[in-house]
Length: 381
Figure: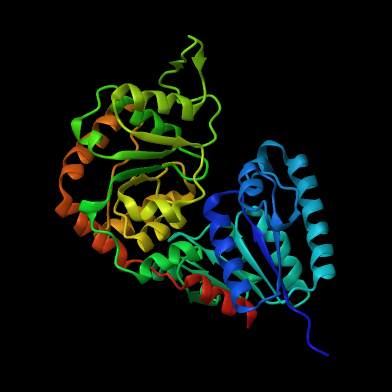
């Protein structure tokens, strides 16, 4: 009899930064092990529903870690159910291996698999390891890291394999051909992460109120996030005179009034077709976004999220800035100061194709396009 195709569980999620590498690994597993079964186990946030719409999913109840103090009983009940469901899922599916993608919902499936001696792995996308992976250190077979600098920040007994951060095949293959020269790129990308970034939206709105001529050289592609109340700095009237409270609508109207060509949406799931034409990305410093920018040789102005756990986005940004691939603009509490610093960085940069090209060349050197295949081979082995 031919052996049945293996099953793999990819556990965790809650953000695009966790889920996108998981989708890249799933894609690689299907390519290397045709017919395999892949089950994503995690929460049910809107981003999980969007990115995993075509995947087999098992929903595990979850509560944010902060609720262990705010709503301890609710936290314990939800995670007690998650542990029971994870145990049942592992017994039912008997997976070849289980891989944590990050986030608190990665914990129950990893522990359930570890208890019955099924191989376990975890992805660590950032330089500074997340809390979930630190918790898993005694129960994990190996942690796949994106950066060599992560190793000293994990317990010494943890097996570590530096694979790079998995990116989807359509983006990884951008490294296989020469990137488009900067002087032929026509867009600027504004990426606030899968959840958007209201302070970044506000700063762009402030700049558009008196848009510098440099902005009008490019078409702007702005990922505004799923914010239904809109940027706090102002609302915009619609053609009927009613107030617009949707972030994308407010930004679209601001770009139009400033005479700047733009496309604005809550989320773009086709960055593989947009990155090669971007002369610059203005973005948060999530590790997955940075890995994708590197494959496309897209230079960046990085605005680390200041409330990120252990300031991990700031550390990510410093790594890319040290590599000559990006500039950093801190998010100041005062909107006017933040917008002014962003403008002072963007105006000369958008005019200097030589400097942008230098940043682009350095960004390409940081790409690791084979990361997803490397992780997939580990899970299969």
